[in-house]
Image (cartoon, rainbow, N blue to C red; front, side, top):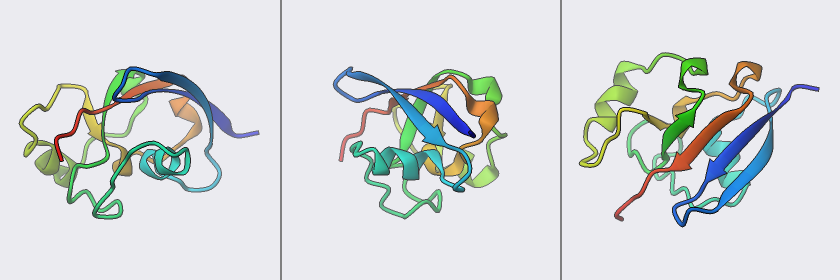
Length: 108
């Protein structure tokens, strides 16, 4: 079984422990949308809109390096945090077991 446990906190502070598959090629954004979280993902996962931004609470060291495109998009956010990432740029993989994220507060 290649499922991982991910903890997600929504914008209202509700926390859920979810089980995510790592064998389907999903990004964290796709998984959050499939789990019915309020993630706009306006650009469809191309790192062009930042509406899938999450704040990584635990497990940041388990994530892939940030691409220049992701960094440039995050840099446009007025309330960027040091642990903010675009969920569309994070492919779910077994190494991400135990990841904890909070949906970034959005004003849109």
